[in-house]
Image (cartoon, helix red, strand yellow):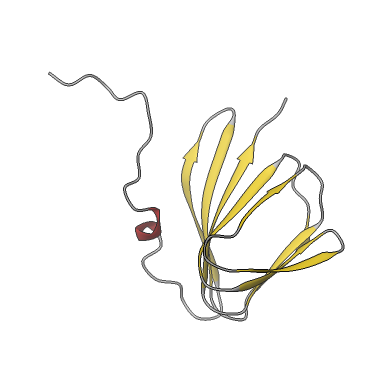
Length: 110
């Protein structure tokens, strides 16, 4: 008899967004508990998440595509494998140059 797992497993997170419709940004919750929120985002080419801040520290991990990422006053080019750690309240934005998939992790602090 197998015990109930004490972990979360997604064998291929990219399969949670099988298709990104044109002219849209879609998201899927991957995991959520009292300390961590993980969301997979899909951006169609040309779509933008305008400047905003997060109340908690966050990481962005770009899985596919190319985007221009603004972090405070800096602008960087993101590509597959780009990983960013951001403190809470840092203004940031994402402009998808191609179709993009990105994993967002929020660390909930109390």
